[in-house]
Length: 457
Ligand SMILES: [Zn+2]
Image (tube, rainbow, N blue to C red; front, side, top):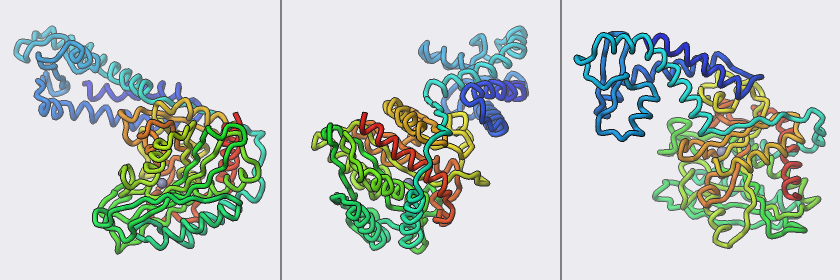
């Protein structure tokens, strides 16, 4: 009974939740199927889960399966358990149940269970995930033509000419770093390298040292206030699956990384070119990180941004904000979207490719909204923010922003949503021809103005 009725309730509640979050752009089918399957699986998995946890499972008849909490549980746990709809109204064993108990459960609680579970799930999502949407500005100024050309040149250079670049292809990685340095020097920046040493035996890589490349634009009014804009320039080595970080398969080519993350590098170089002409009140540190991709991702000792953030902390540099430019080039509907999580839309990241997302942990959400609001002023494309406590979902750390959170610094990742939008993520098909350069230029130009605004506030 609950298995049959449950999903329909969840669909209704999910629909209302989705509508509250995003009235205009609902992918109703995606959400309905997602939540109904989730609840169905949850109900089906209950007896198995309960068996493992030593909970008592009551099978009242073929239609209804329910659980009772063990007597040793504390009161709040029992209350939570009941609230989730897993307890029957009495704590008797099956043979002690009167026909009335069974009747009450059948008629009332199967329905209540469904409603409660769906409500609690929705509230939980609301409580742990903070999302906002900022409409774009249709009257925003068009970017000058050089912006699109500059983005295209950088993406073609890195992903088309150089290709896969990481410590498993050290020459290509060094070539990328040198090219980025040259670009910055041509713009008049002084460039500094920060070495990132790697144990080649542990990581089985050919190169032992990677470099972060930094250019600083000293603020003219508040030089002690720092805003970090970062983008990683390395790409992921080939592994068995696109999400695997180990072992590296050196006989296979890795992704050329046009969108991940030649697009971020191209964006940062383009922004650097524009900023060079007119410095801001606060200091801007433009940093091209290495070793962001697996197997170095989230490995403190070898991840470029982790060492960089650590250095800032050690030197006592005041960091007001950090923005990580990560995967920014896709703005057209792509199918089949195999890598998308079904819960991305209800969590706030809609399926439509007409926005950029500012993703962060909870402490950085305020800053995320600041970035999004500033960006949306200058862009015809909308912005969305999503903040989730790292303790709830480790997946929320998408890029170099994670390294800054670990040093208790506020950081936000701006992205086209990557694998949620496009299956080319971490694949050989992530090539320069797959990017949508016109909207990409709109986004980068708006980011440039947003950075300028925040650096002058
Ligand atoms: Zn990346």
